[in-house]
Length: 221
Image 1 (cartoon, rainbow, N blue to C red):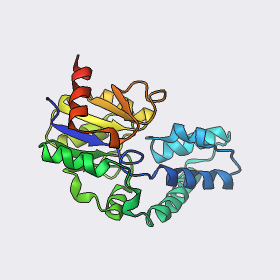
Image 2 (cartoon, rainbow, N blue to C red; image 1 turned 180 degrees about the vertical axis):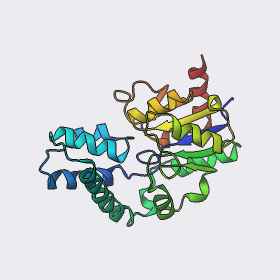
Image 3 (cartoon, rainbow, N blue to C red; image 1 turned 30 degrees about the vertical axis):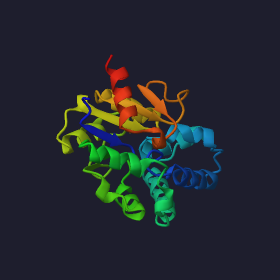
Image 4 (cartoon, one colour; image 1 turned 60 degrees about the vertical axis):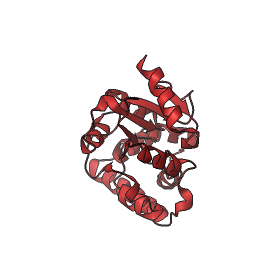
C-alpha cells in the first residue's frame, strides 16, 4: 500500500455543517428576495464565501458593489457562526471517528483540507481537533477549490508527497482540487454528481483500511 496520508474535507464529509451553510445563505437570499433552492445550493459546495455569494446574486440578477457584497458575506457568516456555536459531537457524520482512528493505528497520517475559516470553532465544538495531524483551512490558504492550494498545503504540513495522499471530498469543486493536486480522490455522496472522483462511497461509514487498499489499487492501474 502506497498511501501515506488521508486528507478530509470538513463540511459534509466529517461533520454535517452543510445544512447550516444552506440555512444562512437561504436567510440572506430571502432577505434579498432571491429565489434560492436546495438544488441551487449544490453549486455552493466547496466554494469560497464570496464565490458562493456571487452565485446567489447571479441567480437574483443583482449587481451590488464590492462594499455591499462584503456586508452581505459578513451577515451570512454571522448567522452561520450562530448556528455552529450550538453544534455538538452528535453532528459528527457516522463512521468518521472510527475510520480516522483506524488510519492512525495503521500509521497513516490524517489531515484536514477545508476552505472554511470557521474550521477551528467547528473542531472545538465537536471535540475532534486532536484527531488531525495537520489542518489546512481558510485561515492559512487563500485560493478557493478547484485550486489545489488547500490540499497541497495539507500535504506539505504532513510532510507527504501529494502522489501518496488520498482525499475525501463531497463537492465537485473539491474533487477537482484533489485531482489538480495529483492526489487520489474518494467522493463522498452521489456517483451521479461526483463523476470525476476515482471512487465514490455514500459516507465514511463505508470506509476501512481494506476498502482504502482496494480503491488505491484501482486508482493506480
